[in-house]
Length: 501
Image (cartoon, rainbow, N blue to C red; front, side):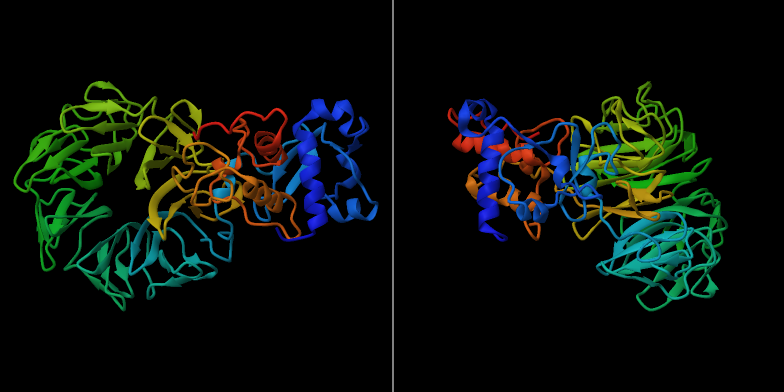
């Protein structure tokens, strides 16, 4: 342990006493306790130097205070009980700092995210990124934003990678200063059109059967009339997919070797297909009776096709804005959401949904939520407004949208979430995350350094392991240290740490 050895020993003794209040009453420590208020700085932090200067020893009374951890420094911060703290959810520590303007945020909405050439690519309404000019598209290398040429003259709605090029679709008519009607490719140096493009907006892109597939509001691609809201590009020319749809396409993915399209349409290839359909390379087919309203996005998770949107029924059964297709029938994902699911991705072992909803599975989840295969959970306190795009970059979950905070931290239209999925193994308490997964004195030392070290030590890699007592507030604080001390050294020993969530 770094810092003062005497202080660490004193803290260990103090916390052991706190862990066993009954024995303290039997004479180990006097019954008089000093209020923690005696050593609280104006910002709520504990003044260890003041305690040392006056030679304080004994127990502290924390009654009347709420204790939280500063998400930046990891220091404990006390505030009067019942007063709302800045950190409203313990998992907000997993939302990254640093996406405020002008350092790393945008000046307007982010509609699309993807990864190209080991960089994160963002597209949308914005014209600056990280304080520099970036017209509707920019790349992030992990520390700074850079423009991609001179960008576009209007909104970028979608992004993908095809044949080694970055592909962008949207409402624009120029890219890099050259004519590019609603779709363009970036080869790492310059923007180029895809023939004559489309006659209206491109909202979604994917790759199927070695072809780039675009969906949107257009009815012609490459000058070919009758592409009807969906078309394929083989690297040289555009082609139709049957007779297309009768209305807009907003979602595309590949599932079970078929191209899946979702949107507003009610026919595909001239046959009835309510808002979702499958293309096998030759003909369109239905997925049961489809949905009763718009499909905004589709993704594959746990060997199932997941659809999100405005709909409240799938295959004729109730499904609130999200549903799963197993190749034969639609099923629900818990109670679903209370408003639109607009974007989907997979992060680790979890399905991530974003949109305009504020509940998922009946629980509070502000504009973003995770499904682990059986239940929904919030990603901290979420965002303060809509989530419109999701992607995984450098082992982190990236979110874009109309929000300006993520986890109650400034996060202008883009944010990053870095909570390891399923990091807790077996039981809680392995705070230092050592390979043997045992709970011992080294975990107590780790938590003491994190909470009280000068300087403070690193935060637990896995928050559930640090929250040794498994209390409902999910915070890592002095009660977790007391719990481990009682478990390891109490007379009698305390209960073992509870199982991981």
